[in-house]
Length: 355
Image (cartoon, rainbow, N blue to C red; front, side):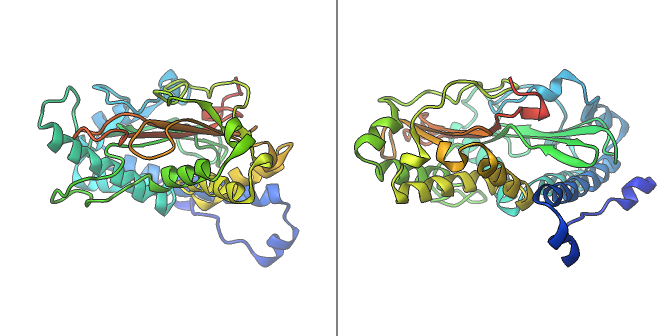
């Protein structure tokens, strides 16, 4: 199938001249970079659509205003929107994975594909006894609207323990949330041929850095950070189209010791690193630009402060909220070895107005 003139013109706009670097404002530069990511995604989206037959296209595409665009979840589900990798040919799967790669950083793509592979481990350990289908190819791709220079379109890539949601308006990537990743097992305890090796911890930094942070606190800072003796069972507002609106809890960045401040910044950057560098840079710039900047970011903890027992944390500011929970056992019965974590946009997930 021949591409339209628009598609042939789509190219990443990531190389800026020295003159532009000198004269452009930060906001203009950010806009140009986000446009580059959107162009790359659009090229990959159209290339994937070109591989699909008519029936697949009917499942893969919806109007931008379709209410299912705002429906997201990471639990195992029998039915989801879109076309799953299992129902694609090998060339179609290859194009779908290129689309996933176009929307994420290399780190984010590697984490995502490893999370998919963990489904195979679950399948082996459950040996068909579980109520859910465990399949590394049970991940669904959906486009909302049509990739174009003008207008709005969106992308959803979702399955068990993954939910990525992107919104593009007039050629610019304007929202990348909800961004959810999970892992079961959080740490691979055994060795199975063809699966992630023993010791694999796909969300290692998200957990280890937070343990280092809570254990670096003492006195008033620790007392403020600990918001509950027992871990919460789940992240808040799971599956809802907007992040929860509650007063900030925990200890403020301004009240952390120097080591604590460094660790908190590392955790935030770890979540940002799932996205392309341009998106990560913008997220960090928004934190800095908000009233109070980093000083008003809060860190809250609930539950145990050592591995193997349920634990939860939250990092929240004016523009974003991170939540992490590890309370469930894995399929082999190892306690607190099953992670859920999310980055949400407090200015409005799915590029919606904030609640």
